[in-house]
Image 1 (cartoon, rainbow, N blue to C red):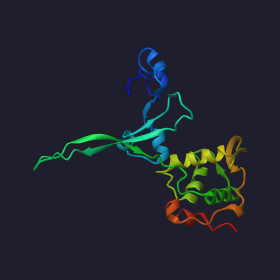
Image 2: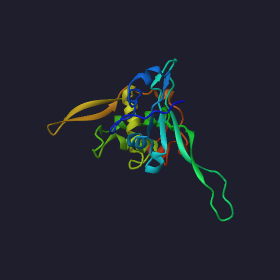
Image 3: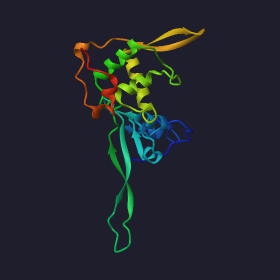
Image 4: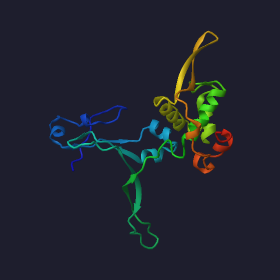
Length: 217
């Protein structure tokens, strides 16, 4: 294994194309694995607010691999490991150790029940797409999932993006006081007969199931 420095990148992430110097080294390598620290956006999405924790997390991507299929990103966490060499009142030395870290799923603890209840809320009221709006759809998602608007905003936005991408939610533009305003509406409806049972409160956040209402009929 050869560790190679990158050229100056500014604020962007490193890729296999960013090795310092000529491209001959990159072209000769069978496998190139760029390493990038966790970004602020990634940390916000996962609810990681401590900067020290964020800086300890590193993503390893497959930048170039003469093998198929390409591997998914691997995460490592830098943790302090005691050498247990302390003697008497002398403390032990610590060294940094890279350990495997599993990135949490933004949908952890959520089921189709939560999507069903969000769609029921959309059908019963008006919820805007803008995160700055008082009636932002994220408030509805937070209520159903038992999440916090303050600490889980990144995760909530990721959930909404995914539901819009897969067609469960859609966006409708309406004229409000002469302005074009995007509202979030139901896309492809979840069939009530296919909805799982009411989740346990601990699996969806504090009070999520209670605040969302009853089970589907």
